[in-house]
Image 1: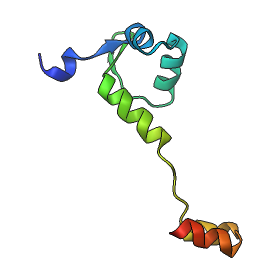
Image 2: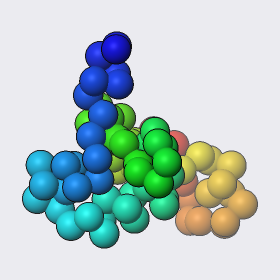
Image 3: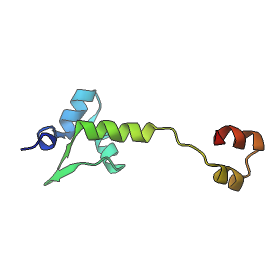
Image 4: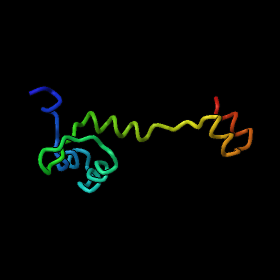
Length: 82
């Protein structure tokens, strides 16, 4: 058994560790959190969960092309392009 499969945890385990409800964990799965399905049970790697959450919270940058398309004022375009 490799380290990845040894670290997989159930929805209940993740919820308990993070002091979350199981509903919150299942919602993250519905939103795209990668899991390993074994039958009806979803198993989650804590490392994958951390990566998923940090990617979700990473600030999005606005490109100049989108600003031009949206016709934002030039002062906003310049500050976003930097």
